[in-house]
Image (tube, rainbow, N blue to C red):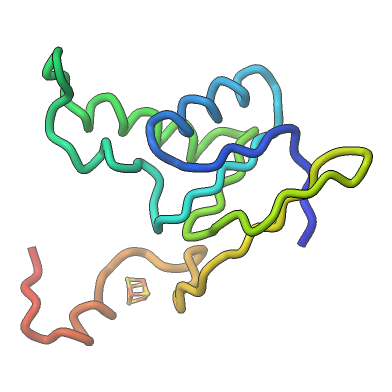
Length: 124
Ligand code: SF4
């Protein structure tokens, strides 16, 4: 599938999220590629940031939501940029989406599949 965008942002951590949002807010069409299953990067896994001890979730979560719902940002999670070539008119990036074995368009996140695979897992 070929999609035309104005900018390609590689990495869905705090820096990539902010870059994508800034570009999207200026009207540019952005493709944001994240190799992990979710955006947020390492910062979302931390508690506080030095030296202000600000809450990482409080900083990252609004940007995750803004990027995920931004009309000018297309997210490609669990995907990696394979190549970037110049074709004379612009750049062509090949992005490979890794297999999820789940359709993210219809998955509700109920976790039944997780418990089916691990009957000893506890529901929270
Ligand atoms: S069982 Fe639930 S969590 Fe698992 S794939 Fe289906 S909808 Fe998603």
